[in-house]
Image 1 (tube, rainbow, N blue to C red):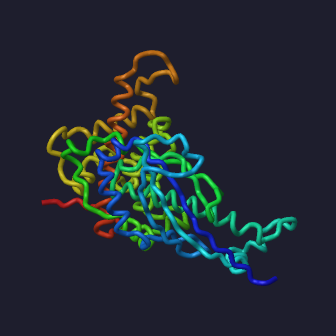
Image 2: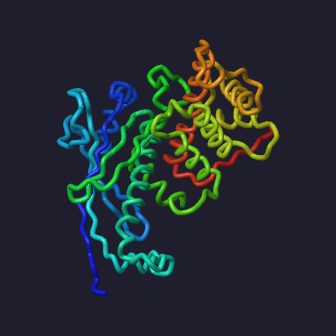
Image 3: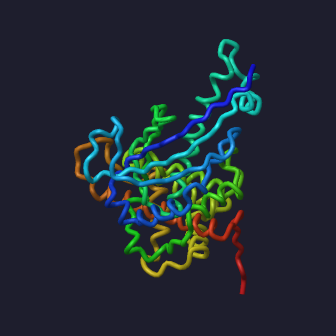
Length: 329
């Protein structure tokens, strides 16, 4: 067959939700950082190569999907373009060998790219939240290929938005940029192409599970994943888990000055929830269980931020292994 190449201009439009909350957490810093790396950040989409991204924030979009937008709405627009060599991708991705006999291989290539683009772009947006936690709360996006709607991408939110960063004295968050985070992920890990193989990779992958279209529906699950990430980084073996977390986290992130027992309280809370020792409400009940919800949100957001602070420091120092040793004096 003759070589066929197709070129697409891609525009992805995300409505930004709860802008006041995002701004309180440093949204303006996120915006400036994204603008500073315009056209420099790329998605390393397997077989298709690097797809470079351009970012823009606007308060109005002329698209029927957003015709009901209000005057205070805000939108993140991500643009890119790519030329796809159909035959080359068929060979690189072994599509001909694995393809059903009744489906032409060339009909698979573009849908395959669309799937990978959505996946990698979502990953990129999630990992911006290591640099600027709690600053992105996005509604479902519309994806245009050559100005024609081709896809939608689920929005993202996380319990990181619940944390009070302005009043927090511990953990101390590092100053790390989106570019630094993204380059670390691409150059120092294999998480985009393989299952996690190291403690740090497991911590990073656990972090991605904190995000969902509406995190309010998954608070206990989010707590599990944030603790899973912390245990991946800080716990060796199955003995003294609470003590290991308490000692190693403070060794790495610095001593807690106030509320010194909060790490032990966090793990005890998680253990009580997992092992059935915690009093919990019936699902969708009508009782007043504000105390339960308050404790759950506090523990969840705190554990998520401790995980973020740990990953920030790891990335800032380009660490590939986190090890501890006891010293006798």
